Image (spheres, helix red, strand yellow):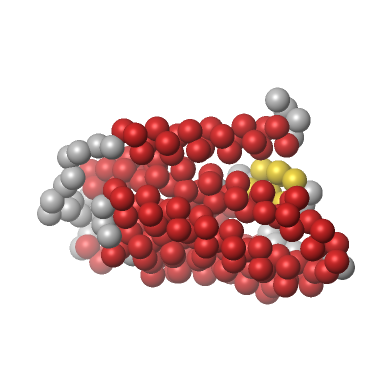
Length: 214
Protein backbone atom coordinates (compact mmCIF):
# COMPACT_ATOMS: atom_id res chain seq x y z
CA UNK A 1 0.00 0.00 0.00
CA UNK A 2 1.15 3.54 -0.68
CA UNK A 3 1.30 6.12 2.11
CA UNK A 4 -2.09 7.67 1.27
CA UNK A 5 -3.83 4.30 1.31
CA UNK A 6 -2.16 3.42 4.61
CA UNK A 7 -3.33 6.71 6.13
CA UNK A 8 -6.92 6.19 4.98
CA UNK A 9 -6.85 2.61 6.27
CA UNK A 10 -5.51 3.72 9.65
CA UNK A 11 -8.13 6.47 9.99
CA UNK A 12 -10.86 3.96 9.08
CA UNK A 13 -9.57 1.60 11.78
CA UNK A 14 -9.56 4.47 14.29
CA UNK A 15 -13.17 5.31 13.35
CA UNK A 16 -14.23 1.70 13.85
CA UNK A 17 -12.40 1.43 17.16
CA UNK A 18 -13.86 4.73 18.37
CA UNK A 19 -17.38 3.53 17.60
CA UNK A 20 -16.87 0.18 19.36
CA UNK A 21 -15.44 1.86 22.46
CA UNK A 22 -18.32 4.36 22.48
CA UNK A 23 -20.91 1.61 22.12
CA UNK A 24 -19.61 -0.87 24.71
CA UNK A 25 -17.36 1.14 27.00
CA UNK A 26 -19.78 3.55 28.65
CA UNK A 27 -19.44 3.79 32.41
CA UNK A 28 -22.23 5.47 34.43
CA UNK A 29 -20.72 8.13 36.69
CA UNK A 30 -23.41 10.36 38.14
CA UNK A 31 -27.10 10.86 37.27
CA UNK A 32 -27.46 10.25 33.50
CA UNK A 33 -23.84 11.16 32.79
CA UNK A 34 -21.64 8.39 31.42
CA UNK A 35 -17.95 8.25 30.55
CA UNK A 36 -16.43 6.39 27.66
CA UNK A 37 -12.82 6.66 26.45
CA UNK A 38 -13.68 7.13 22.76
CA UNK A 39 -12.31 10.69 22.81
CA UNK A 40 -8.90 9.20 23.57
CA UNK A 41 -8.86 7.46 20.18
CA UNK A 42 -10.02 10.62 18.41
CA UNK A 43 -7.20 12.55 20.08
CA UNK A 44 -4.63 9.89 19.20
CA UNK A 45 -5.71 10.22 15.58
CA UNK A 46 -5.20 13.96 15.78
CA UNK A 47 -1.78 13.58 17.35
CA UNK A 48 -0.69 11.12 14.66
CA UNK A 49 -2.12 12.75 11.52
CA UNK A 50 -3.16 16.25 12.58
CA UNK A 51 -6.32 17.97 13.89
CA UNK A 52 -8.29 17.41 10.68
CA UNK A 53 -8.18 13.69 11.39
CA UNK A 54 -9.82 14.32 14.77
CA UNK A 55 -12.58 16.22 12.94
CA UNK A 56 -13.11 13.40 10.46
CA UNK A 57 -13.28 10.67 13.12
CA UNK A 58 -15.57 12.77 15.30
CA UNK A 59 -18.05 13.53 12.51
CA UNK A 60 -18.09 9.97 11.17
CA UNK A 61 -18.54 8.28 14.54
CA UNK A 62 -21.11 10.80 15.82
CA UNK A 63 -23.15 10.31 12.65
CA UNK A 64 -23.06 6.52 12.88
CA UNK A 65 -23.93 6.74 16.59
CA UNK A 66 -26.93 8.97 15.83
CA UNK A 67 -28.19 6.49 13.24
CA UNK A 68 -27.62 3.32 15.26
CA UNK A 69 -27.67 3.67 19.05
CA UNK A 70 -28.49 7.25 20.01
CA UNK A 71 -31.96 8.43 20.99
CA UNK A 72 -31.11 12.15 21.17
CA UNK A 73 -31.14 12.85 17.43
CA UNK A 74 -29.35 15.77 15.84
CA UNK A 75 -28.98 17.61 19.16
CA UNK A 76 -27.13 14.67 20.67
CA UNK A 77 -24.99 14.48 17.53
CA UNK A 78 -24.09 18.15 17.88
CA UNK A 79 -23.27 17.76 21.57
CA UNK A 80 -21.01 14.79 20.83
CA UNK A 81 -19.14 16.63 18.07
CA UNK A 82 -18.69 19.82 20.10
CA UNK A 83 -17.48 17.92 23.17
CA UNK A 84 -15.03 15.75 21.24
CA UNK A 85 -13.59 18.53 19.11
CA UNK A 86 -13.22 20.96 22.02
CA UNK A 87 -10.84 18.45 23.57
CA UNK A 88 -9.27 16.49 20.71
CA UNK A 89 -8.87 19.27 18.14
CA UNK A 90 -7.51 21.79 20.62
CA UNK A 91 -4.94 19.27 21.86
CA UNK A 92 -3.99 18.20 18.31
CA UNK A 93 -3.64 21.79 17.04
CA UNK A 94 -1.24 22.70 19.84
CA UNK A 95 0.72 19.46 19.44
CA UNK A 96 1.02 20.05 15.69
CA UNK A 97 2.49 23.52 16.31
CA UNK A 98 4.77 22.29 19.09
CA UNK A 99 5.63 18.69 18.24
CA UNK A 100 7.44 17.90 21.49
CA UNK A 101 6.72 16.31 24.85
CA UNK A 102 5.91 19.69 26.35
CA UNK A 103 3.65 20.45 23.37
CA UNK A 104 1.71 17.24 24.00
CA UNK A 105 1.32 18.06 27.69
CA UNK A 106 0.29 21.66 27.01
CA UNK A 107 -2.14 20.53 24.31
CA UNK A 108 -3.81 17.93 26.52
CA UNK A 109 -4.12 20.26 29.49
CA UNK A 110 -5.48 23.04 27.28
CA UNK A 111 -7.96 20.63 25.71
CA UNK A 112 -8.99 19.55 29.20
CA UNK A 113 -9.67 23.14 30.26
CA UNK A 114 -11.36 24.19 27.01
CA UNK A 115 -13.61 21.14 26.83
CA UNK A 116 -14.69 21.61 30.44
CA UNK A 117 -15.56 25.28 29.85
CA UNK A 118 -17.31 24.58 26.55
CA UNK A 119 -19.39 21.74 27.93
CA UNK A 120 -20.45 23.71 30.98
CA UNK A 121 -21.87 26.32 28.60
CA UNK A 122 -23.47 23.73 26.36
CA UNK A 123 -24.91 21.85 29.33
CA UNK A 124 -26.57 25.10 30.38
CA UNK A 125 -27.86 25.90 26.89
CA UNK A 126 -28.69 22.52 25.36
CA UNK A 127 -29.32 19.97 28.13
CA UNK A 128 -32.77 21.41 28.98
CA UNK A 129 -33.74 20.95 25.33
CA UNK A 130 -32.72 17.37 24.65
CA UNK A 131 -33.19 15.99 28.17
CA UNK A 132 -36.47 17.78 28.84
CA UNK A 133 -35.17 19.25 32.11
CA UNK A 134 -36.26 22.71 33.27
CA UNK A 135 -33.34 25.12 32.89
CA UNK A 136 -33.54 25.94 36.61
CA UNK A 137 -32.96 22.28 37.42
CA UNK A 138 -29.97 22.16 35.07
CA UNK A 139 -28.48 25.28 36.69
CA UNK A 140 -28.71 23.60 40.07
CA UNK A 141 -26.75 20.63 38.69
CA UNK A 142 -23.98 22.62 36.97
CA UNK A 143 -21.57 22.84 39.90
CA UNK A 144 -22.35 19.66 41.88
CA UNK A 145 -22.72 17.32 38.87
CA UNK A 146 -21.71 18.69 35.45
CA UNK A 147 -18.50 20.44 36.52
CA UNK A 148 -16.99 17.44 38.38
CA UNK A 149 -18.04 15.12 35.54
CA UNK A 150 -16.48 17.29 32.83
CA UNK A 151 -13.28 17.74 34.85
CA UNK A 152 -13.16 13.99 35.46
CA UNK A 153 -13.76 13.18 31.79
CA UNK A 154 -11.09 15.63 30.64
CA UNK A 155 -8.60 14.30 33.17
CA UNK A 156 -9.15 10.71 32.11
CA UNK A 157 -8.95 11.60 28.42
CA UNK A 158 -5.74 13.59 28.87
CA UNK A 159 -3.93 11.05 31.03
CA UNK A 160 -4.95 7.99 28.98
CA UNK A 161 -4.03 9.72 25.71
CA UNK A 162 -0.62 10.68 27.04
CA UNK A 163 0.10 7.17 28.32
CA UNK A 164 -1.08 5.44 25.13
CA UNK A 165 0.31 7.75 22.44
CA UNK A 166 3.87 6.46 22.27
CA UNK A 167 2.99 2.72 22.43
CA UNK A 168 0.30 3.17 19.75
CA UNK A 169 2.57 5.16 17.44
CA UNK A 170 5.39 2.64 17.95
CA UNK A 171 3.12 -0.22 16.88
CA UNK A 172 1.83 1.70 13.85
CA UNK A 173 5.39 2.54 12.79
CA UNK A 174 6.52 -1.07 13.11
CA UNK A 175 3.59 -2.22 10.97
CA UNK A 176 4.29 0.51 8.42
CA UNK A 177 1.03 2.40 8.79
CA UNK A 178 2.81 5.50 10.13
CA UNK A 179 6.16 6.62 8.71
CA UNK A 180 9.08 6.88 11.08
CA UNK A 181 10.09 10.45 11.97
CA UNK A 182 13.23 11.94 10.57
CA UNK A 183 14.42 12.68 14.06
CA UNK A 184 13.30 10.80 17.13
CA UNK A 185 13.48 12.18 20.61
CA UNK A 186 15.37 9.68 22.75
CA UNK A 187 14.99 11.43 26.05
CA UNK A 188 12.13 10.20 28.20
CA UNK A 189 10.55 12.34 30.83
CA UNK A 190 9.57 9.85 33.47
CA UNK A 191 8.24 12.59 35.72
CA UNK A 192 5.53 13.51 33.20
CA UNK A 193 4.59 9.86 32.76
CA UNK A 194 4.28 9.47 36.52
CA UNK A 195 2.08 12.57 36.75
CA UNK A 196 -0.17 11.29 33.94
CA UNK A 197 -0.45 7.92 35.68
CA UNK A 198 -1.31 9.59 38.99
CA UNK A 199 -4.00 11.72 37.31
CA UNK A 200 -5.47 8.57 35.79
CA UNK A 201 -5.47 6.72 39.11
CA UNK A 202 -7.00 9.72 40.89
CA UNK A 203 -9.83 9.94 38.34
CA UNK A 204 -10.51 6.21 38.60
CA UNK A 205 -10.62 6.38 42.39
CA UNK A 206 -12.99 9.33 42.15
CA UNK A 207 -15.36 7.35 39.92
CA UNK A 208 -15.21 4.37 42.28
CA UNK A 209 -16.01 6.62 45.23
CA UNK A 210 -18.99 8.12 43.39
CA UNK A 211 -20.24 4.58 42.71
CA UNK A 212 -19.69 3.78 46.44
CA UNK A 213 -17.39 0.91 45.50
CA UNK A 214 -14.68 2.22 47.77
